[in-house]
Image 1 (cartoon, rainbow, N blue to C red):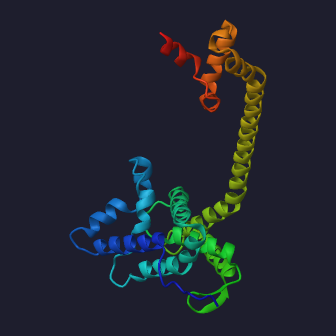
Image 2 (cartoon, helix red, strand yellow; image 1 turned 180 degrees about the vertical axis):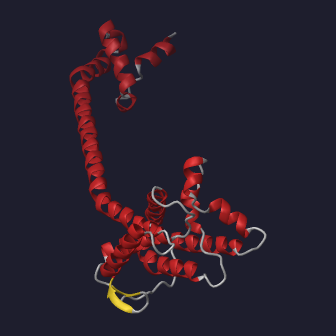
Length: 280
């Protein structure tokens, strides 16, 4: 049986819990609750017909405000705490938050395509988190419906199957497709994230390797140029003075001073363009 040693909440989980509870407290206020619910809940007709795209995100922070329905908020927040803390610590806050909203928004998009009534709640995003937990810790045991001890992967399978059946039948008065959508989006993410990031990392590694190889070749070429062209000119200056240089040698010296002034400084030779200015 899994344990819940969450003595300190990571930043992402803490902020999500605070945001959900804060919105719920506003929901139950009689003079503003109905307005918040009307403006932030997911209404398919308004998303498509009026361009209320923000509802694909804001619906996740709403929960049933009716008396006696606080279980809706309590269950989602409890599950988010139980399974999200370890995921955020493993992934880091940024990746976890992106994953959470990806599951929630993805579930919303799948829902509005087939569901025509108002949708609200964090269940899609939370079930995505539960799916990720089951993906990494499949054999840890939890109490399904707070009664039956089962491995996490079994719990996700059962919840997904129930959501699928009710989604097809349209029974229950709940947007079960939102629940199923959160699971589906999570699975797609979990199955594709590693291969995609590995491919990107491989591509970036090859680019970096080519860049380093090119820089090494340029360094060798520059060193050969100084050895074969510039060094003899510097030697001639040291032995015969600056006036002994031909026009071609002066041009080479000018080019070398522009390309590598450090080399000229180390050789204690004043670049020709500076020398020319001083001699005027």
